[in-house]
Image (cartoon, rainbow, N blue to C red; front, side):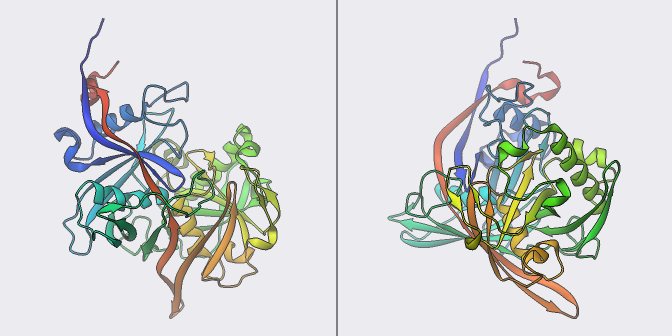
Length: 401
């Protein structure tokens, strides 16, 4: 019988937006896990309880969904224009994969509160704390405005976010220059140089898509390209293997078109987190997953997004950023759903309700640039302490427990 001791690592379990994850200060990680690599990945997999063929993550902190199988590492930044560096890992449930390729916009809202509570940044005793975040995955700056009172982060309040049961304090986020530049992964905001691309998907045909780098690399298609109407909930999609396979086929071939991988197979196997595949449709009435009616007159469009192979229960934060950016630029599929008009602010319907987002875009010499995307989220600490993992997690080549 193999007997291995457990090690405890200081950690905080947090909700950010409509996601949850385990947060670590970089300095609190074991020395061998402070650098990217096999040891760090093995540790994060064990923390979450992956890979799990039962798809439950019973033996870890993950919640068996893409929204709840996440890890975050935060450390002081050496950049003059940022306070902290924020690294996000999407932990696959069934596979031994931690995808560090993109950001989680929802958990971004928890980075500022975590950094303040952990003593990584100074904050005013009362008022709004401005936390300048360097998103290390996508090499972008984000500004979080965090409410403070009597030296503590304000975590409870009256701000309601569809997809989250209880109200909390509002945290305003500014995603600065969310479109990738020439030095960013995947190239420019529109990596192919086109606002709409024709993606050839073997066995499916040609699919019209907007490929955009904003928040995260994102692929937008019309709902009808998937045989859908745009008002679907998780129960309408995630129980259909044929539909999930179709969505992944489109996503993986679009990933190749964006220059992010060499083959579609590589996109599925090594890069499940980004790009995201989203589908949009004109506004229509539907009933959200909470039972709340969403009226067509109250939204500008319907939007849904896939995350780690399944339909998301609400909307990813970076997906919301991508919607805001694409809506602000005429000629994209998103703008087309909006009758082709340029919008600086949109309210869209998602499976859990609605969300309002905005972007500041401008055209110069035929090129579009986006200076910032704006949205509000909330965050709350759920647990503080130490997460326990078998010591073998730090020796992945011997980890068979």
